[in-house]
Amino acid sequence: MQPIAILGAGIAGLTAAAELHRRGLPVIVFEAGKAVGGMASSFKDPQGFTYDVGAHFVNNRLAATLGASGICRTVKHYGEAVHLGGRTYGYPLGLMRSPHFLRSAMASRLRSRDVRTAEDWFRQAYGDALAEDVAMPLAEAWSGAPADQLSPAIGNKMMHGAMKSLYLKAAARVTGRAVCIGYSHEAPENAGIFHVYPEGGIAKLLEPTVEKVKHLIRLESPVEKILVEEGQVRGIRVKGETLEASAVISTAPVHVLPKLVEGTDALAPLAGFRYRPMVFANLHFEGRHHLPDTMLWVPRRDLPFFRLTETPISMPWLAPEGKTLITFDIGCQIGDEHWTMPDDKLASLCLDGICELYPHLRGKCLGAGGIVRTPVSYPVYRLEYEAERVAFSRSTGVDGLYSIGRNGEFAHILMEDIYWRTLKRMEDVAAYAGRLASGPIEENGLDALKALSEQMNREPGKASGAAAA
Ligand SMILES: Cc1cc2nc3c(=O)[nH]c(=O)nc-3n(C[C@H](O)[C@H](O)[C@H](O)COP(=O)(O)OP(=O)(O)OC[C@H]3O[C@@H](n4cnc5c(N)ncnc54)[C@H](O)[C@@H]3O)c2cc1C
Image 1 (cartoon, helix red, strand yellow):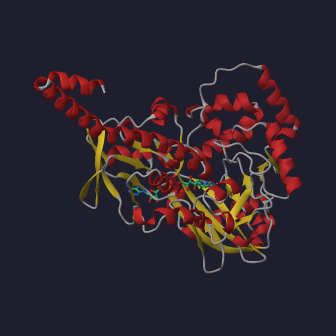
Image 2 (image 1 turned 90 degrees about the vertical axis):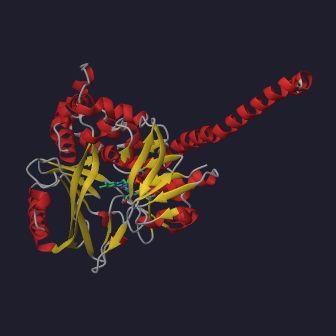
């Protein structure tokens, strides 16, 4: 059997490789970059501040499943807040305690509404006041499109029952651990599932998996083409070389698939799918606990950023003693004002913005850390391609081609969900590989039948006896 080719050595590609290898299937992982890990990577700057590229928050269940519990520290506290009209509300329960938001949410429950857009969904689920003041400005900042042009499916990412949140918050208080709320959808959250952080950075989480499959990984090997014939994957092209493959598993952003795939235009609609580009600006400050909680949502259209994260509130070891790091998330378009702004100007814009909320921070800023620009951050569920998105979530439409992981599924999923979803998808891949492998057996079967019929023609009695046996 030809190997199964995997594009990408992030958590999805590595999990897929380890699972298929465990099942005894031949696999090769092609990674475009110089290192494994993809978005799950961290780096430390010369001043001793650690930045995570994508994931900051992972839980003990994922760490245990990946065999990395031994290197993980327990995170004692994690919380989110919303800054609104000069006040801070705990998220999500503090908002629901406001009489203004509560009245509006109750009124929405009494109304029935056709839910066709994200705006309808927010109004229905949260009430008009919370939808207009918080949910819609945030959804627009992180997707770059007005809520009435987005699919109501983005609500699924946010859906979380108030009672469940209350129970998990209480569990966090009792256990003194940062019990996860809203981080896992594939596996249940409960008081025993809490945030942890691996010593040495988030990439360390993947080391036990890498250990299992490192002999199967080819670094600096971008897959240039996925070759399809008669609707079925036949191979790939890497560094100008064509290799046969029985199946291909891609973790690349889906909008590049139409360019990668040769031999079918089944994937053409994916070219229109959009990801939100983002700039993450990091500023260093003297002192700690400058934000009311680890993550602060800022639903203001007049500020460049919509979210601030002070990771050392949860993971003190990510900044030197007595100092802290605040990350500013800025949604943009490639080439727009913020995308092209020089780093020092962007840093001072962020400082001006945060000082509107907390004026005392101006005197505490120690300067800018890294400023990271990423063209592919959040998948944007625009209504204009909703039907194609739903179809793609079921299948790529090409036999033997699978698309997994956050960008590959075009889904707002975090590392633990990627892990469980990838394992499930590997059952499909293994079944497909099994059907392919049974091809030659079927042919063998045909050969046997042919031989049998020839024998019957020669020795009728013996052959029928053999057939009956
Ligand atoms: C801002 C942000 C914050 C996040 N925070 C959290 C969090 O707190 N907790 C959490 O659990 N998750 C978080 N996530 C999500 C998490 O980081 C990602 O979901 C996860 O790391 C994605 O893994 P992946 O394997 O799907 O993709 P990736 O990590 O993107 O890996 C894909 C790999 O494919 C390679 N590749 C692409 N094209 C090719 C090609 N043609 N040939 C070969 N290789 C190719 C890339 O180089 C890359 O290494 C966050 C994500 C973002 C963007």
